[in-house]
Length: 401
Image (tube, rainbow, N blue to C red; front, side, top):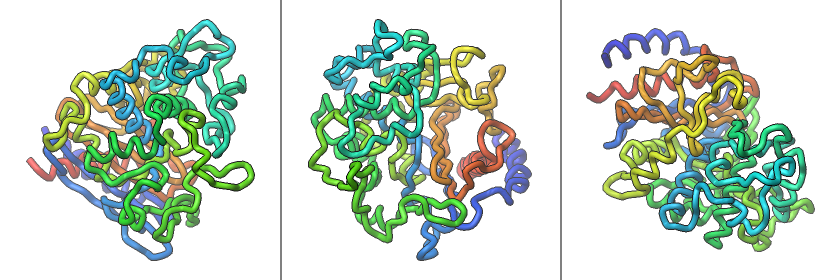
């Protein structure tokens, strides 16, 4: 069976050889199982200024895979009895969270994490500047679906859900999100990663992948030092983080996409999930929490959400189940048969992914950068660049019996 998969993948990899980042950019893939790494590859330039070659240990702004890490942190708080997935989120925020068109319908953490809370993005309003207020952003009717209420369970992918989630986290912990999640999730996993750079090590900062488009740096051109302002600056240009107040603005450290992490770091998260919440003898989540995280809470039936042309067909708590083979779905990038779940990322010329197959107990993580705003599509709803790295990751996984 494994040999047959490998024979299928060889011509696919050959056909895809010319598909990749144009100009500066990277292609990194890691294959793993619960016990460790099965194989890894890296090519391209992580920093165009120094021509530093990319490695699987180099951190990048991983985009929406960040949401999965936020959800792991939320479930740790649920296990500690500090949060309830199905409780009214207003209880934790200290103010009434409601879709103004459906004021009688409460909104839960589970709905926020699964994009069924009727929250909607517009004009990147989820990037709230320092000094801004989440509550003020949500007072805008355009931040809500005016036709579908939360009780309907209608799915539309929305980044703004995660600043709400993190505002809740900050309210119940009393801590700044970036420091809290490093202590409670990232450090226990044994990963050198951070949200928006302040809590990463000096060595991680020195290895940052510079994200580029059309040959120009668009994010994380750090020159070996942390940015002067690690958040969206205030309207007057100032960046005084002593203005932070727990829960006022959960968007500050970009929970929807601002995690800086390497492909190897992602693989450790995947290993923990395959291990039912355990990694290297340390328990991060209970088995029940892992199941709650990865089990689908929404399934596309053709009319109950926006699948974005077949990309979103099943979704859990910040986790996407792919290769569903359902009518109207194009979420299979050419994977071997299994139970694939994880999350993808897309921003600033980067595509990323962390995916595990719960059937075989294996997984892949990948990062590719330097892509145009609209890179060539693949045979599925994923881009051709992503399909290439899916194939490479699966092939790398065949290196060890």
